[in-house]
Image (tube, rainbow, N blue to C red):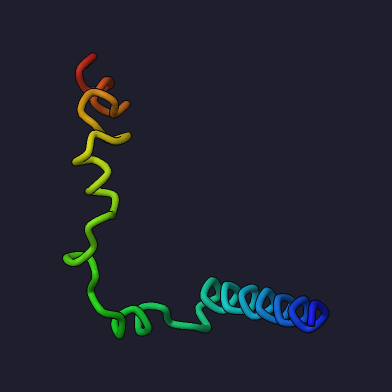
Length: 72
């Protein structure tokens, strides 16, 4: 059973490598595939914007770009 799982993991890694190579070389059009996906931006409550609203890393005063613009 472990040997079979190891073999399946190996095949999945090979598939992933091939998939990445096909996307990078343009053999696979990810834009076409992405158009078929549902738009989840409006329904997702825990994206990067949620972190900023909670005072995460993007909280006011912690953005290095803000420091640069204020020193000019």
